[in-house]
Length: 357
Figure (cartoon, helix red, strand yellow):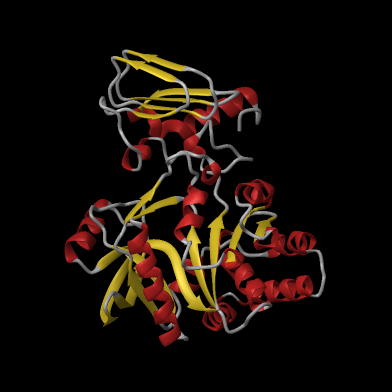
């Protein structure tokens, strides 16, 4: 049996004012009127049954996600009381799944990317699931061949091929400076680290026991208590404050004795900011991106215009700008200034507290 786990805990402040502390970016319907989480679950269709798809998220988001994904059992949507990074989220999911089937295979996916075409994604997931069955002691990750020297991503140093599209991993490299990233891309031996994985439960539980034993044992105790009828939310609230905050890469992947990589031959795009919409959305005849029920643009070029409700957005004579309307706040900025959005949000909090956070 194979299970899918979607990690969906991030808030994404760079998509303010639609994304807020209590409303994560993965629930905003930006891509073809679908949210990133909708797309993440949709990609798994045909690979996993709905009852075998789990979501690990922030406790504040759990009810929103349950409402957005009624096809999933409510018990499969688990809210962490506080963020403790990906290692603990994965350890939690592994132990909950182990209560159902210790012999299962577990696939871990992100909820904040656009990945296409879905057919190529499905082929890579099939390849990884098969490779995990053939190598039950290995941890598998997905690597994306880089097409430019990205300095905001980690890299996987790829080793010899074991099968078509499946390689040994020599090492993981953290976010490099530009010249190093350029060497990585030119060498052809490095892939972007996708943050998505496949492994048998036995392999990940054994590795967590070796390298992150406190978290592994705490999650195992928690999962057993929940399976015996304990209140999962109360158990999580009791357990999480004492856990070390650490990513799965630092905790496990960089130390594990046997790590394999499956090539993900897809377009893999992080929609982490408003300018990133240009890579995933259709443009009108003037190069504008318009995600709004009611809008009129006149003499406008290369703008991003977004609203979720029926509020009319009328834009005149503007080029290379971002206009985002929400019920209580509106953002207007140039594309080049979008990288300063966190600075703007800090200033807003200084003036208004958490009212618009």
